[in-house]
Image: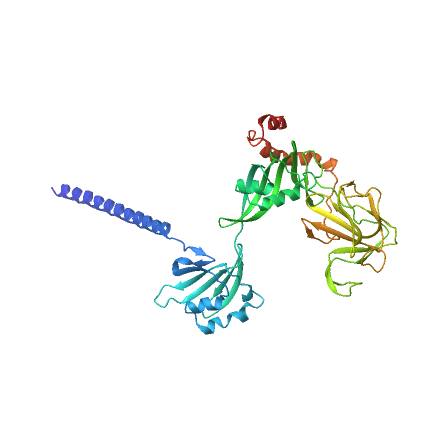
Length: 427
């Protein structure tokens, strides 16, 4: 009997010990599980402009005509001593005079009963904003929104114009300008025909969900008057240019100057004392001093669009090289042989001779250069290389464009062109 009691006590002790270990282990497991769960459910604050928006009451608005940031802050109860600090703090950072009517703003108010203005954010551009900190340490900070790059492959048919095709296909209209620049030397954008079209692999830039521009065009083709032109962006000699599928440059180079044996007597400037009129005004060209009768050459292939005389320019010739570039040659003594409106000229062809007709104090050539209708400095215009991809680099170039060409051509023929025409292009 005594022996039985002892055995029973031992068994009971073992069971109690096992139970203790089990509950201790279960408790530790539960504790660990709860801890891990707590970490998972912890939420991060929602930030906008770097400000935790869930900690404030946020009011949005639009700058009205003749409205200032000071008046807006005053309407929200901001203290006068804080508002009065803003003009001095904006110096060298952001001028309050730059605030534009129609732009958006947000004001962050404390959630207590005081509704105290704490932050004011002004949207200056789609990519730039200004944060006004309205606490005891008043400050102004101009910041940039992160730009998101989205790579796209877009294709469109032109029914009326390149611009209309962008709108019809929900494409950024800036893409039309970029394409006209890429294909400026191969496609006549003033002669676009119904049925022309393009396909382009490019980067579009976004801030939030708003498109703010076109980034890099990597590759494209443009179908113009039944012929397809390819363009691939590639670096040679540390410079990016566009080349066709065989490695030929899409662009033609300009001559460095339209005449030889000359010196520059006046440069491109926004303000110059005119030698004849004796007033200050812009000089949107470059003057080359040279002996009268010095031959003047066309800097590139093109079409003569003007050959005339004016009181100021004297005898002058204007040449349109393509849809982007136009040049003019002023104060000529006489015109070159067979130079008339509509005639084609080639690079290096003599189109006139240096003179001093019009407003000129001595013989010189006033040379003008326009890009997309805007006067640019002829001395700083980048003259693209016409050299093809070098022989030693052509294999690497072909390997590089293989993937891009596949993106442009591997998709089944698009219905935007007649099937027989586009299928022929794919053969």
